[in-house]
Image (tube, rainbow, N blue to C red; front, side):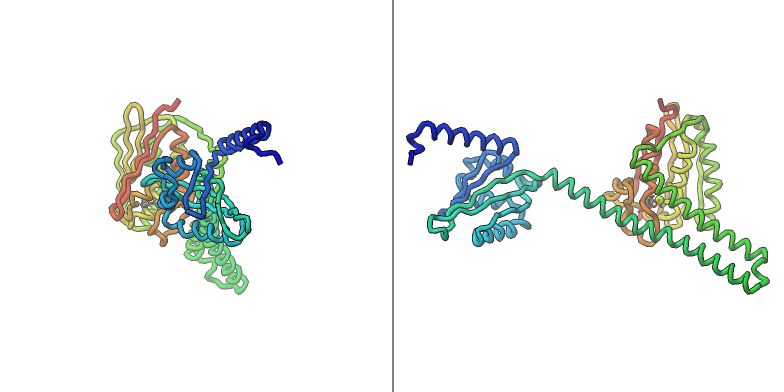
Amino acid sequence: MPNSATDPALEQQLKQSRESLDFALQSGRMGTWDINLVNNSIACSQLMLDLWGVTAKELNGNRAILQKKVHPDDLQRMNSSIDEAIKNDSIYELEFRIIPSPGKERWVMSRGRCTYDSDLKTPSRFSGVVFDITEKKIKEEKLTAALKARDQFFMIANHELRTPLTCLELHHQVMELELKLNYPDVFSTEILKSGFQKQKDNLQRITRLVNNILDESQIASGSLSIQPEHFDLCEMAREVVDRFKIIAESAGVEVRFTITQSVPGKWDRFRLEQVLLNLLTNAIRYGNKTPIHIEIKGDEEKGVMIVRDNGLGINSEDQKRVFEQFERATGDNNTNGLGLGLFISNSIIKAHGGEISLKSEIGKGAEFAVVLPRFPG
Ligand SMILES: Nc1ncnc2c1ncn2[C@@H]1O[C@H](COP(=O)(O)OP(=O)(O)OP(=O)(O)O)[C@@H](O)[C@H]1O
Ligand SMILES: [Mg+2]
C-alpha cells in the first residue's frame, strides 16, 4: 500500500481535499470541534472560537472553558445528548444557546459523531461541526409569537362577534314569539323604541368589528389609501365629539374639549375621524370613568390632536406593543377589544406622514398625541 507521507500524488490529493473541506466549512459558516475523549481536551477551528468569543490561547485545549459559555439552562441537555450519542454510536445533533460575552446570547446548532478505537468499543474522539442559527431562531420566535397573537385574535374576534349576533338573534326570536302569541305590548312605542336601540347598538358593534378587521387586512396588504381634502381639524373634532358625547354620557363619563384656534389642513377626514373615535373609545374603555380631555391645536406646519384620561394607564414595557396589531396591554381582561384600534390609527397617521405618541404611567392615565403635517406633500 502506498504511504501518503511519501507518495506526492496522494499528498497532493489529501491537500486538495483539505482545502475543499475548509472552503465548504467557510462558505457554510461552519466551525469544527474535535474532543479527545481519552484526555478530555478539545481542538476547534477559528470560526468556532469566534462564535464562542475565545482565543486559541485562552482555550488551550480546555473543554471546560467552552462549556462555561453554554447557557446554564442548556448545559445539562448538551452533556446528556453527547453522552447518549457516545453510548449508542448515534448522531449527536442539538440546538442550544451560548453566551459569548456577558449580555450577549447566540443560538448554535451542533452536529457530531463519536469514533471508537480499533476494538470498536472504546470511544476515542468525538468531533463535529457547529454553526450560528441565531437569525433563524429569532425569525422562528417572531413567527411563533405572530401565530399566537393571530390565534388569540380569532378567539377574541369569535367571542366579540358572537355576543352581539346572539343578542340580535335572541331579540328576533322573542319578537317572533310575541307576535305569534298576539301579545298586545309588542307594538307599544316604548318596547319598540328600546328594541330598536338594542338592535342598533348590536349592529354598530358588529359593523365596528368588521370594519376593523377589513382595515387590518388592507394595512397588511399595503393597500390602505388616504383621500386628502381641505378641512378644519377643529371643526371635524367638534363634530366627532358631539356624536361621541352621547356615548360618554351613557357611560357616565365627562368630556372636556379645548379648542384654541382653527387648524385648517389637508387630510383624509373620514380616516382622522376614525383615529379620534378610536382614542376616545379607548379613553372610555380604559379611563376608569375619569373625565376625558380633548385638545386640538396647531401651528403653521402641523395640526395636533390630544386625548387624555386619568384611568388605568399603560406600563412602559407595553407602551410600544399596544401599537402592534392584536396586541392588548395586560390587566384589562374585563374589557373587550380586538387590539386593532391603535394599530389602525397608527397606520392612518403614518400614511399622513404624521406620528402618534403616548405618555402614560400605570394607574395614572394615558395621553395620546397625534401630530399631523398640515399640508403633506
Ligand atoms: N387610554 C388608555 N388607557 C389604558 N390603556 C389603553 C388605553 N388605550 C389603549 N390601551 C391599551 O392598549 C391596548 C390596545 O388598544 P387598541 O385600541 O389597539 O385595542 P383594543 O381597545 O383592545 O381593541 P379594539 O380597539 O380593536 O376594539 C388596549 O387593549 C389597552 O390595553
Ligand atoms: Mg381600542
